[in-house]
Image 1: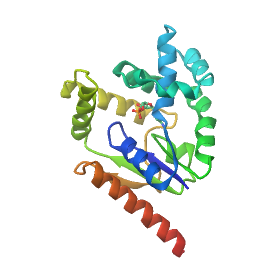
Image 2: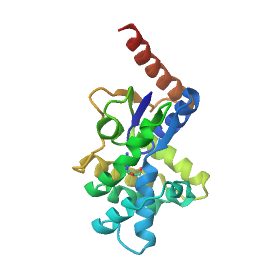
Image 3: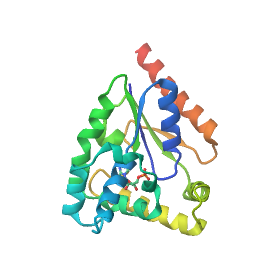
Length: 212
Ligand code: C5P
């Protein structure tokens, strides 16, 4: 079974994806880490994330061992990740790894922006997770503070909106729901309720499949 979970930053998709993978015994890939690792490699080498040739070379040389790096969640990497992610050659270079990951038995949950539309358009279940920008900014601020970073909620909101805009407007695999994705709005849901809502959708799709 392949489950695609897409949505904007801090919508709750990562937490839902991790929990769903654990409960269903599936592999889990946070695909944002790939773009973050590419961004870090480019920045560490002293180049700008908008340097297409450097970003493409970094994507081609990506080592999955780099995904464990704690610094990948730092704000400077977050911003640069959305810049390298707009480069079509970078997305192309990262596609095979994600598709092969999705095919590994017994199946996988992948979360990102283009899983249901580009990486795994044939996924068994597709979720598109959303929440209002204000709620997402509040969640991200709590997360940043829990890691000991300063977080002004207005700045966090502005960063999120800028990144959403860049992700949604780019021509290569923009952030958008697949036509057959199930919308899950977590604005008024805590972690447990969001997880249960996701399970309900997955089970409804599976039951519907068995019947038909
Ligand atoms: O999900 P996360 O916030 O870690 O992703 C960081 C950035 O990577 C996003 O802002 C987006 O630009 C990019 N990304 C993407 N496609 C994915 C996952 C992430 O373009 N499937």
